[in-house]
Amino acid sequence: MDNTEWHQKYESEIQAYNYKHYSSEIESLKKIIGTPRSDKFIMDMYIALVNGRKITPKMLQAIRKIILRNSPDFIRKINIEANRLIPKLNQIRHTLSKCGYTEHYVSNSEYFLDSVEKQVLRRGTLTLNQRKALNKMNKRFNKRIEHINNCSHPHRVDNKLAKK
Image (cartoon, rainbow, N blue to C red; front, side):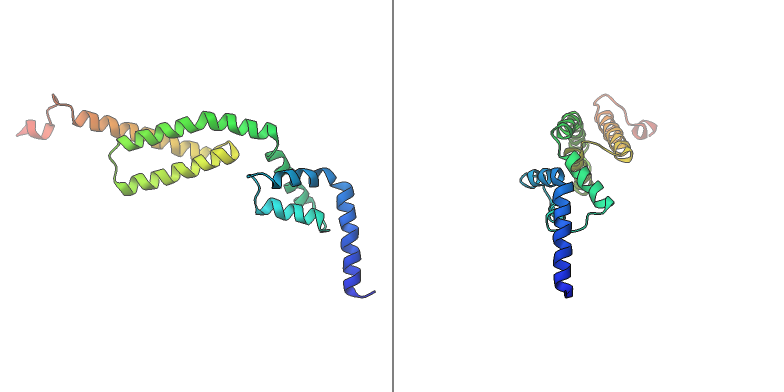
């Protein structure tokens, strides 16, 4: 038996083993691949299962995590959290638009807010640092608006003019 024949036999044995032991994972990944949530990694894991690649414990853990993240219950939780967080992000965007910051600053802030929104829609969560950053942004924007409103008040006397 030459090396190629041995490799094919070994691959077919692993393929049979995978179908026997991971049939539910194969079916679940097959369903996920047909959805918009599918990506290259999910496809690679599916191909590894069906083409006779030995599945390591780390690969199996990743496959099961993919299946969990794409379960209807998990997606429902993500949607609930997204529906709670997206209006808050939109409120921060609205506040930002009133601040009168430079175009560059607004653009960078919008970029950050867009990336946070993508994560909320994808994972349904924010990291502690993202929440802190959003809180700081919100406070800074509200303070700026308050400062703008105080400066443009018609009855306010500017201290520099009063001293002259």
